[in-house]
Amino acid sequence: MPVGVGLIGLGMAVKPHILSLRELEAEGRVRIVGGFSPSHERRLAFSRQWDAPVFDRQEDLLARPDLDLVLILTPPGTHLPIAEAAAAAGKHMLVEKPVEISVSRGEALAGAAEAAGVRCAICLQHRFRPAALRLKAVIDKGDLGQILSASASIRWWRDDAYFQQPGRGMKARDGGGVLLTQAIHTLDLLLHLMGPHKDVAGFASTSPLRTIDTEDVTAAAIRFHGGAIGVLDATSVARPGYPERIEIAGTRGSAFLETLQLTVNRSDGTTEIVGSSRSGGGGADPMAFDHGPHRAVITEMLDAIEQRREPSNNVRSALHVQRLIEALLADAATRA
Image (tube, rainbow, N blue to C red; front, side, top):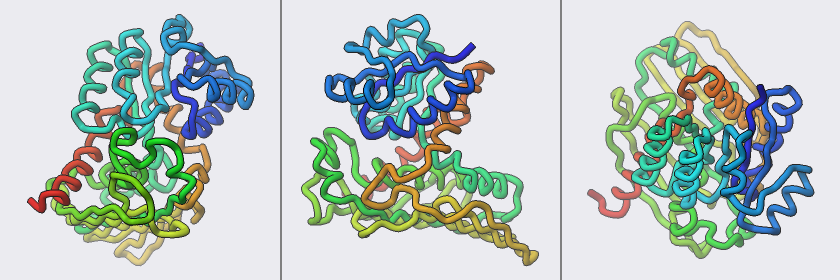
């Protein structure tokens, strides 16, 4: 039977999700029950653009007996109460990044899903890009040997129009700046590949380019539990925006991942290249990317529901990156 899917939050994040759902609906895997937003204008625009049902009240959508899975696509600080309502209604959930605006609220969200016996996954789609999947397999197989060093560089740009949306870049709405809102994708992938951090020394500041109360320039040194040392460089002030990169070096080779292209250089002299180098949303248009990885995220959730197992991207797995971000910003603030 197709899985009944609803969407809560019909703003900028909805496009790759609805495109993925339309394809999966055509294949008979899902049935779009409808969407909800507290904004009448957004409900109307969503209904017209995507020819999909909308609900005037969140509780009406959650009360639908044919609803199995809820996509929570609202601003981070609203995720917890929506997730609690969805869990109480017995609905599985896929939550847009980050889990919430803080680790403590993220843990409360995960706990609500677990207490209700529903599955809850996170949309951090970089893990599902083909080149990233291949790099994960290369590392897990031991092709690079003992990992010694790693780095992540996210030198993106966000223009004035991006920050014109009320609350954008403010702690009250987003919970954080470049780390929690933009760089979280690449940083999450770094931890997905390397494992959790052990300790971090960080620096963070806010540029004079925009009136926000969150960081948009950051740097850090990271030590991982596995023993490797890494560095992070993340900003949203690098006009016009450059491809994000992850570089990993081990005793038997190294790997270079730039957006959608992976290059692996092994100690035996062989080189492997996977994917192609293309834009990934690092410029002024944050939605300038292919929706294929989003479809993979949703497909993994559908498989988990049907097979009655935890999704590989369960929501607790995303708390590792939020713990790192909080530790980095705390160190930047206190130099402790």
